Amino acid sequence: MNRKEIKLELNGNDYVLPFGLGFLGECLENLGLNVQQIGQKLDDNPFKWIPTLMYESHKYKCLLDDEEVQFTYRELVNFLDDEEGKVKMNKYLIAFVDSLRKDVPKENSKGVKKKKPQSI
Image (cartoon, rainbow, N blue to C red; front, side):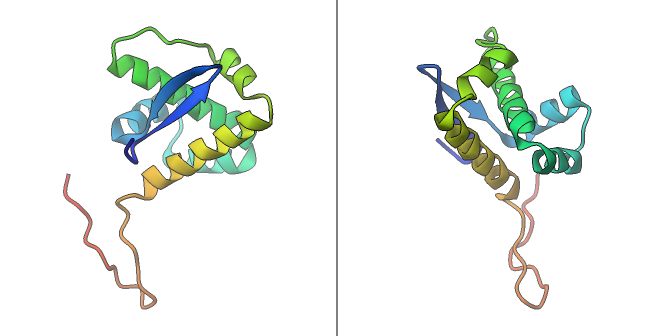
């Protein structure tokens, strides 16, 4: 597993939920939001928006693999509706945020960037 995806067990099955630029672009387009709005929605109501991002990630993986979506949003919410589901949501959120920060340059105490941005 790399930092651009997470593998989670849901309802007895293992699923790979990707991140990365392709996922983010597709997700923002599907939801009609920008990155800042996603962050605000996650802050305001993580119990709705983490499963929403997880579902968008699953749909994107199915699109990449030319497969049918294997569960509905409602089914996903039901899979996550217990203490173990909250742990999985937290793991997903941490991995998602880490994927966004992966190539962001760090600043030292003087505000000078320590790392040059990578070219696309």
